[in-house]
Image 1 (cartoon, rainbow, N blue to C red):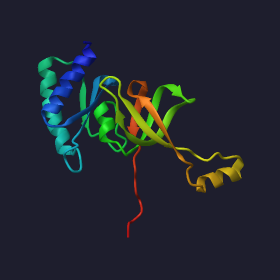
Image 2: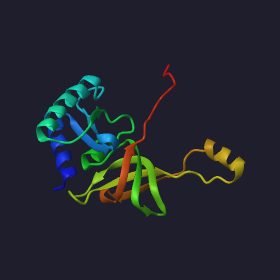
Image 3: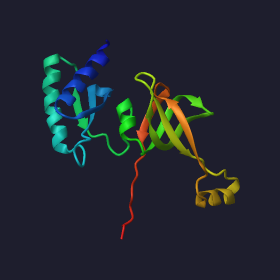
Image 4: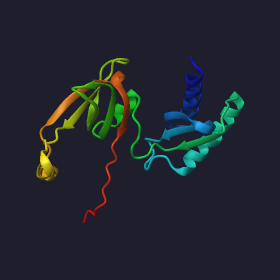
Length: 179
């Protein structure tokens, strides 16, 4: 197991021992360690108090383990949460996602659609996406009409989890009032 994997395992064990879900660890320039955590069982998710609690504990653990870093940043995953583990894809079934593939499928490396679900045995998991086909647009008038038109029929695509380079939730924001 490499140093990066050992550090990730140490941080994951600490975060989950405190009752949170470990999302990701990023080593950035200038000695920055960025830890992202979630609290799916808590209404409203991760708050500032949660980040402070985890940061204090991780600072102690990293000092005891002799991990070399300059700064530690602990945060919530945000609205465009990264999806990387099978449990993430199972948990967020029904949500809109943006998936970037390692190799193109049907000439496309980026897929956007509704995550239908996760299937398959451990190590061979697959996700199913419902992609809405956009109507083709030609010329300026065609683009305006396509923007007004309803999406075409949905198309189902199945992708191996191992073929995914990056995946994120697509934020669903509502700015209007519901009167």
